[in-house]
Length: 400
Ligand SMILES: *Cc1c(COP(=O)(O)O)cnc(C)c1O
Image (cartoon, rainbow, N blue to C red; front, side, top):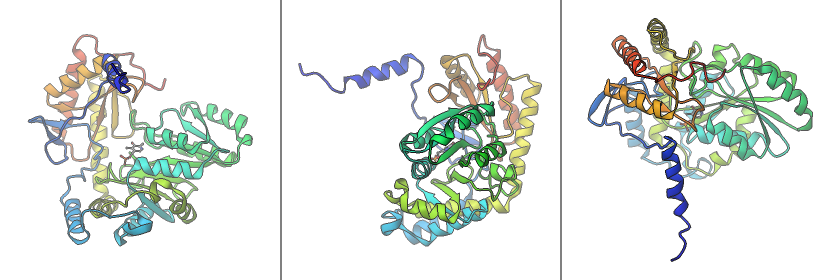
């Protein structure tokens, strides 16, 4: 019998299943919102990145429909060759205005924005310092660049400083890359301290505002605004797919940086432009983010209410300023059991397991459109899940 060169795939999947790491997507059968239909059940949704509740907003839907009717469903080519529309440029100017940067460039996804930006500004003779809990797109962007990559621990910035002291002089350029809100723990990067170190050691800084845009800062510009770092030399990356309720990514920064990326970023040059629908929806979302700060206030209120109730109920949740919370659990199997028990109780909050995180957990993300009753039901259900046998892992935060 001939050997099967693909036999390893089933074996590999078996290993994944045995470790309780196996994943598969679940279908949501309704419009995005604080409650969704999943497998014929209505569940309160704590699994969404739609922090401001814009993905199902009528105004975004209307904008997408109008753009589709006017410009069609596809952009038909890359921006440089045939896909560019005025709408793309309007969105870029709106993002630059939100971020208070000279310019911005829109990519087909946040993932591609990170790959393109990092691999364009750093190369073989350069050094990248990367937070060890950075998003996959930052890590893969660093790998793609060919630069030497060193990971650092943001809770001990002396670690970063020591690495800079030891290594900076050996390299031509140096880039520090970090999430601004960490997507699994919900904590914020120490941006002002990172910028101070960057200045001292002549480094560029790239900050990924995926979970912060629309959520942090008085005008919703993100953590850079929250920390008073607006206008400082920074490469800001983000996504149109979270609080902005659409699809796509962006880089915002100096006019020279953006011009450089238009000429160098392979993930921008060699890919089809964003669809008219996604572009128009994102443009409408940026307008709403700037004009309706009450959405951010409602989200902030929900964060405070949830923290207060969870603390009263003595739930060992991670504490953060962001709408992202985690409940650390003993192991992957426990997290899966907790996830399905929550579902039985009408709560959709996913189990997150290795290799995404090192400590298995239930991840909770809050939205501006959650009502008090939703939050109370969540706290009740989490309390009940934890009262089952030995659900809890070590209660330490994963960063300790
Ligand atoms: C979601 C996310 C991305 C990817 O953005 P997409 O637009 O979904 O590709 C990048 N970085 C971080 C930190 C994210 O959370």
